[in-house]
Image (tube, rainbow, N blue to C red; front, side):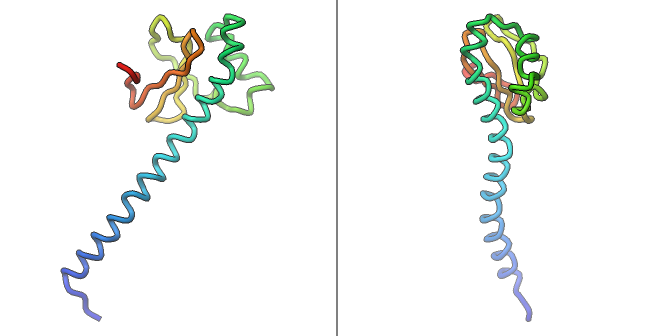
Length: 117
């Protein structure tokens, strides 16, 4: 069977149109999932952190404790220059960085830029 150039290019275009969104969704899921999990863990700890006035090092030790170690987010801890209202940052992947403010709210960076700037 012989295919014309137009048929081959048309087939390739259809395949590309189908594969690009699928690849985008797979990439989004792979990056968003760990970031969302990190944010959920930080959100669940926010009350305790504020109540006990935990420092960054105390929070890392808490996350390494047997009660929280299974969450695994202590492995994502990154040392970033913090603003005065920021407590800690975690980078579960190269796209999203999730942090916690001293007031207990979850804060985000996307591709190295703080949201809301």
